[in-house]
Length: 328
Image 1 (cartoon, rainbow, N blue to C red):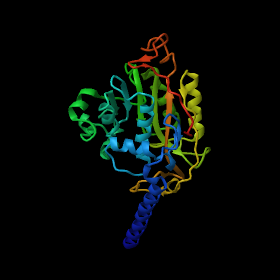
Image 2 (cartoon, rainbow, N blue to C red):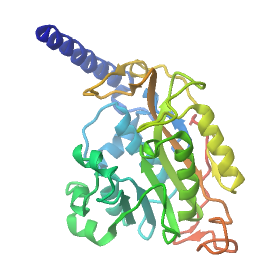
Image 3 (tube, rainbow, N blue to C red):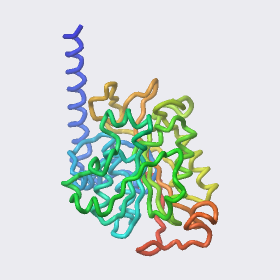
Image 4 (cartoon, one colour):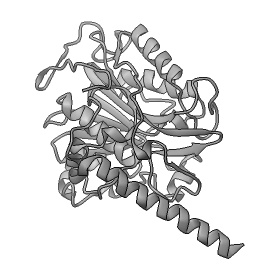
C-alpha cells in the first residue's frame, strides 16, 4: 500500500507540473494583458494571469506560477495601484495579514501601513501560528528583497485586532485590504458583516479590496459555517446590495468564462501542489476578489471621523475609481 501511495503521489505531482507548464504556454509566458479589469469584483481564472500579474510578482520577489494565492496578492496590488492608492502619503489598513508580502510591498512605495492580526493570546491564533501564518511581530513581515528593514520599521505598525470586533479608532484610511481572511470568521454572515464594518475604517472615497473563497460549483448549496466557508455568487450579490444600502459602491461581481487548462485542474488534500482550484467538502473552490469604494458620506454616523460633511480629497486630490465588470 505504501508503494502504491507513493506511485499515486508521483502521478499527481506530474499532473501538476504538466498542467503548470501547459498553462504558462497558454498565457504566452505572461506577455498578454490580464483578461479582467483591475477594479472589478470577480473570481480567479487562468485568463487573469498576464503581464500585470508578472510585473507584480517581480515586485513581490516571488517565483512565477499560475496559482490562486499568488493571484490574490497581485489582484489586490493591481486594484490599489489602479486606484492611485500606492503612493507616498497614503494610509493603508490590512486585516489578518499573517506573513503576507503585501505589507512590505506597500511600505516601499511610501504607504503608511497599519498591519493587523489576531491577538497572540487568542486561541484562534494558535493554528495560524503553527503553520507560520500569524504575524507575531514586525519581524514576521520582513521581506528584505522587497523593502529595506529600516523603511519597514518606519512605515509599518503592527496591531492586534479581532476582525469580528474592529476598534472604533481605526478610521480615516485611504484603503483597507484582506487576503483570504474573512471566510475564516465562522459563517457566511460573519464574513459579510466584516466587510460592512471595515468600511467604517475608510475616509470618503477610500477603497476596500478583499479576497475570499468562492464556490465554483453551486449558487445553491455551499459550506456556510465552520473554520472555512465558501461564498457563492448570490452571497456576494447580497454583499453588494447591503453595501449599497450604506452608501458604498461595490464593483458588480461578475463571473467570466473559465476556459484555461488550470481552470479545471483540482488540487486535493494535503494541498501540496499549486493550483487555481481545490476541494472544500463536496465543492470546488477558488479565490475571488471584492472591490468597494466608500460612499461620499464616509463611515456611518457623525461621531466617526470622515462622517457627514467630511472631505473626499485625499493627500493627492479626489479619489473616484471607476469600478468595472471583469472584461477589459
